[in-house]
Image (tube, rainbow, N blue to C red; front, side, top):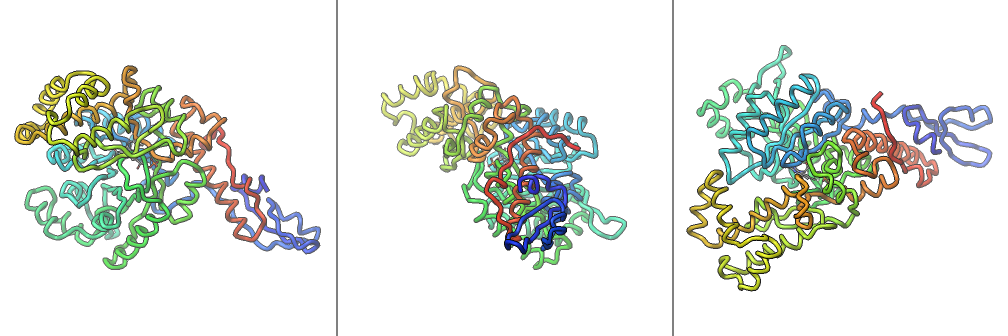
Length: 511
Ligand SMILES: Cc1cc2nc3c(=O)[nH]c(=O)nc-3n(C[C@H](O)[C@H](O)[C@H](O)COP(=O)(O)O)c2cc1C
């Protein structure tokens, strides 16, 4: 049975033995000679065949496998380049980086991968910094970046529409050609709908009036969805709604189909799955649900190419399933938004929660009891709060002076800025490996890392040094094929042992 399952690139036969009435599987039909009957056969299966056919055709990938963006360059240029070389698509983690840094990264990736290997970049919504968002879109268009994953958008923005439809034209066969591809990352049906429906005519007209789209581009865009790749993000690392994939994915898949019918799209938008994918079984299950592509995140953060310190990768490699938790986020702290982070080996979640508790309970820094303030200065900030505030002033004078005006008016806002100093730096410390701040590391990750660690225990993928983005991807996809083959045989009524669903990681080569 083991061989029949593992050798999934060959035809498998399902045979019935009339002598004892049993069903069994084999890689040849030799048993027919001793009176067995072939009751079915399974054609060869290839990891390349998982997902939507059009995903590979449109994006030029070998595998329907996406290495998700991770902010602050954790999804580094090397990670994106090696993902592309392995036949996947990697998205650069542009969130939180300066435009100059992003431009350097785009230049490097483009140069290393050339025109034929696909890759992309993240555009994360920054409601408080609309100019930054617009400037990034400008840069992405100027550098001809063909794939952009847009995330954290609750409503459609002109920036995204402009990127999506710039360069739209009719091909020789009359079909509309889209040079730019938007991958929309969503975790709620109401947000998905905005990316799946045609753009409101007024929005297109406004972009034409501003000279951001041509009249021809806008005319072709009418009646098209903004995104033809919708990533359904279930419980994941970083920002997450913590929804289980099997609950969320089918809803969005259905929605894509309904809207494609309603608006008469030539192509149904592809729906991909993200969140919690850290084992072959999880990947196989996502494809079985109908995912056009899969996206991994947390597991790649411990890869050698990820832009994270060795110390932080080591902590990630030790994490179990329950070793992550929700903690207040730096970017939307005041709104009570949380992100999923590592719990084991760091005090960050407790410390960040304490800051949020204080923020809710007090009107200003001065309002916090003196003993509590001293504790914060000693343990958490490791400097007087006045000094932290001076640092904030220096930072926001350059970045966004409006924050300082608001802080002057509202002492509670001043308190939030001071607390965000800690929340912002705590995700920088694990990147640079700040040894004096090990217990304050804010490492975004979800339960996928725990299940991955358990799966790879004892194998070459257990130490972070063995975890390349390519080996992680190839092993997950190869393993998913093993799981799928075992499930196929079970669906024929063959007694398939639980061990047939097991795939141990092994060094794999791209043939
Ligand atoms: C360290 C880290 C940083 C992330 N940063 C971003 C980001 O900046 N933008 C974004 O859209 N998604 C971000 N994500 C989400 C990933 O791109 C991916 O969708 C998610 O991690 C998949 O779920 P998983 O963590 O369960 O594998 C991040 C995830 C991690 C683990």
